[in-house]
Length: 458
Image (cartoon, rainbow, N blue to C red):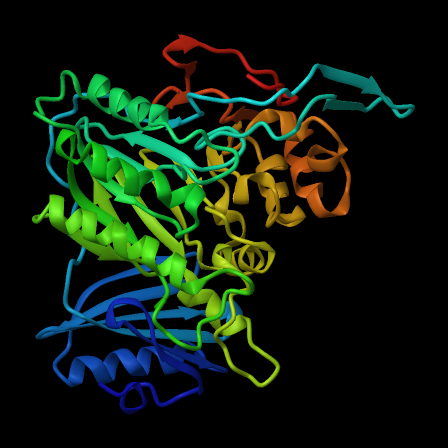
């Protein structure tokens, strides 16, 4: 279909084909009247509205007709509409599933099972202004395959006992900071099987969500699906990837081919081992209902792509894969969890422009491991509002107890804001940490845990 026949207002700024034959059209200098007129034209042409959603004034809808699916989005603060066409595939059910509650909902941040490197002793110095500087005097390459220094791995258990895995972490035997064993794979499987007890499911049931195709997020899933695919049952896979076969896609110094091959391997593993699994290429504004949980996808690479162009106006530059990382919010009754992936400054900046204080959540996955990408105005959402926020840092704590990561340096000041807030508590992936989302109690590897508000390593 041609969007120009239905969206007659504004100015089409971008029209390209993305992943899995998804066509994305961006309309700038538009308004709500243009957007509503487009919907009226679609209905008149025989399209049926499947669902719609509104998030703090931003409007989203999905239409279907035959084998075609259309997604529309309108952002008033940006005067921008996004129009997406894709072949009909998986569409999330409109209602919450019926289930029997077997477990308390929880989120677990995985640490590494096999660390090495001499990190030295922890030193705490007090400056003249009374502020403390923490640092280690040993080797800061506190490296592992997943968890501590690099990698992002989260497992959420839902009320019916099934699981949502977010990324999974790193497993790169060729990496200089990884020994090449499968201890992290074993730990993930043991966790799934142990917590599957009492659910009534023969094997752990998994929904697997992937943020982006960097090896510290996707290489462990690829290895896990080779070694232990017969030990779990993957029912749904969710992602939002760019088209790595697009010759105009550029990722700075990164290899587009290597990133794309990692995604192809992951998809092939799922297809080969779980023929009934569904693939969900999600877009901003869509909702996914799971037992006791509602996911709301807030932003993907499709929303950012128009913002970053080459000097000749070519809108295909992401600099690196972190710019393709999506963000979403998970709701468990009154509790919320915000996943920021590895988004960078400009991506987070646009997210703030669109959603503002709506991003405030009870549990925050700190953007890009806390290395970069955060914003002062974003961090203040979590520090200036009432209510405790648990900050989950997908990295080891040793990297933050000095001025380089946790101090007042302009590049990482967003970390300093979080660290010094009296209403934030901090958990690093140097240890496995679980937060029960019904009562917000915390444990480390099954044992009660107390973490001070200064973010001391667990």
